[in-house]
Amino acid sequence: MSEQKTQPEDELDWVSKTQRKQESDAIQKLGRELTTISEQVLAQLPIDDTLLEAIELAKRIRNKREGYRRQLQYIGKLMRQRDCDEIIKGLAKVEAQKQQANQEFHQLETTRDAIIAEGDSAIQAVIDEYPQADRQRLRQLSRSAQREQKQSKPPKSARELFKYLREISEAAE
Image (cartoon, rainbow, N blue to C red; front, side, top):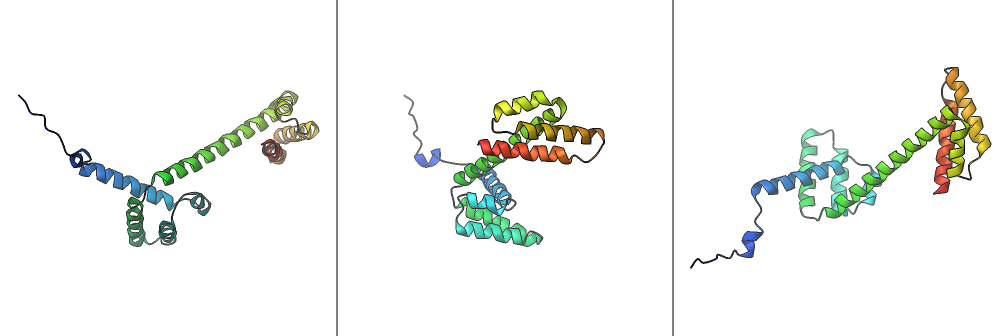
């Protein structure tokens, strides 16, 4: 009869050198990414003081090639000693917020362009969506923007229209 070999638990958790290297490189890349983001974003992430100080030092010595490289190595070492899942989730959340803001910005641009091109029908759509919007102001800005386009003037009214749309959009939230 054949004997079944049972593997100890230590052998089940075995990780190849290649896989460890790939994980290390991914953490190193994450550390490099942390040195490029703003202070406001860093403040939102669950980063302890030691790692935060290392990141700030790396930002200060960025133009010192070898020192910066060694600092990135140190950041990678610190991050390998920590659970990076929360940092990755925090970065993903910040990125999602940035994409949401970009999407809203583009939507406002599209609405502005529609108001300038179509006039009253697009204004009515904005009034339907934002009842607190001032129809008279929208019409005035629309006419001024159309006039500026025809006369090849700078789009001052189009900018004002965009600002007004952003104001009423933010007020509705």
